[in-house]
Length: 349
Ligand SMILES: [Zn+2]
Image 1 (cartoon, rainbow, N blue to C red):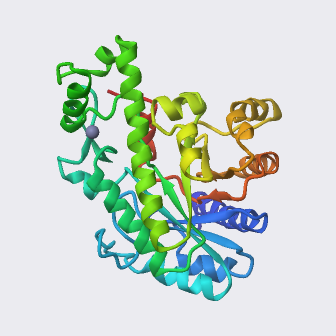
Image 2: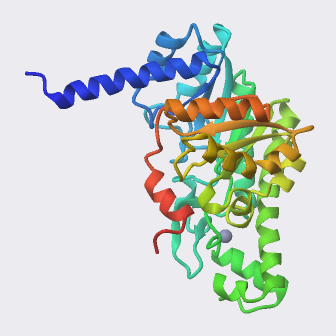
Image 3: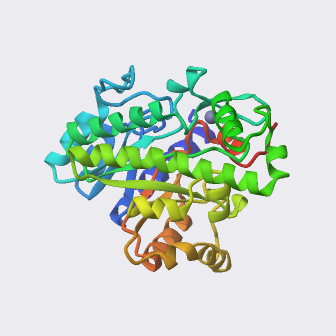
């Protein structure tokens, strides 16, 4: 006998497939990560190949593994050829391909204690690499060059190039360097920094400059080989006060980012539910004013995790108002979602 839960599951699967098709036919760009998705890349091509105009494929995962034969990053044991193979097929049938690289989230690289990010007080943040490490800037730049040179792509999305919260990074290297710079004891905490506004402001500027160094290194290295568009993420959530939190917590300062890259990726409401009515949408539109002020000479795209139909429709109206070039969307919420939400919103210890 078929159980009710089975029927519900089958119905939900059908609904989600219809929704993917619906979003793609409305011009959305599906983001593929074989580790996160329930649908295989082959199924995506077989089912939607005829209506897909552009697609985004993850090239380096949150785990730090490459979905292409890399000489730099460890090859993913299951999907080590996926990016290259899929990009080739997509190119052959006229689909434009974007690559996505997860930046400071790197389960592989962060295992090295010299590179791991640390919270104020000293606790290591598993899975995150400290943004001040120039060795890591070069590492990401090499990966971006490999991706750009091995496959025909339109652009590279740099996602998760960030500090996860103001409590990071207090690794030994970050503390030692800053203590020398401003002449304080190296065993300082976030609370102590915040009590000295001039020093804290310098600390915040240094964090933004670390991201500037990382993004510039990647762009310069890629553009020395190939003119591929680099799209840099801004994490914009109401819980972190949109652009304020992007700068103060994540060091993703729109002024810095828009100086060095002409295309920004607006990851909207990653940790909070998306607006469900016009009033809430107006609040979001107001919050996005800094983008509207910079629209001339700057391109933007929208990024959403697993949108429902209402969210996608609202995102489309935003796309019209902000002249966004793409709506990138996933059909999954990352496995890391709950842990990351706790960290980014500082909900835990
Ligand atoms: Zn650090």
